[in-house]
Length: 233
Image 1 (cartoon, rainbow, N blue to C red):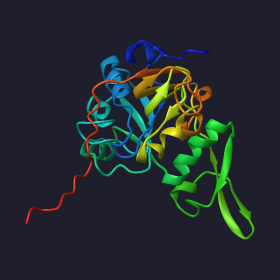
Image 2: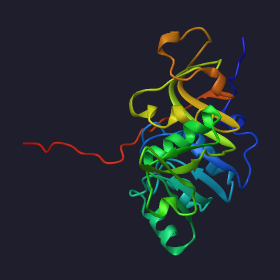
Image 3: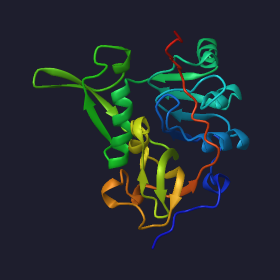
Image 4: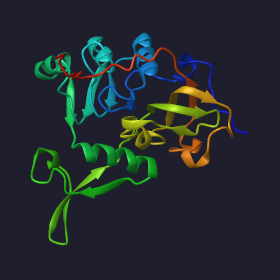
């Protein structure tokens, strides 16, 4: 039986270098690879390009890399919760490529499936389409979007086994599954790691063939991005 388990996050991130392109799963602060991000901060890798739905908040998630000025370029869909991101973007310190959310997800999925590009109507007639090929299908205009190319994909799952099979929970399924196998190396961190053969095959969301390294994470904070509560009466 193939065993993809590694001893620690440090081993899982072996080969990470300056100037690389990383995919990081999660939606808001839900399902983000907290352990991998913390290790990237410790490694102090520089001039990296990060592909992620959002950029975390000022003191959590990708916001930690932004604070340390480790990110050269950010490819995202929603970035409205991070003041440091705004400051670096407006000052020209950070290169930003805003991408429609569905297009961002599909660019990951296309890379996962081995498709070099795809046509989408999203962004036609806007700055998103500038410099890109456009084509008409059935009377509607579409933009040709290339699939992403990344060196590492860092994802976080609820449960996984030593063969790399993954089960995601709730909102963590929005971007994490699409990023598995969409980079040269996919690193999965899980809350619970079990022996191969333990998981119900019918419950598995991503098969282990899309994962190269897996480890059990530690100390998940699972912070809430925008906490809304009902006032006491």
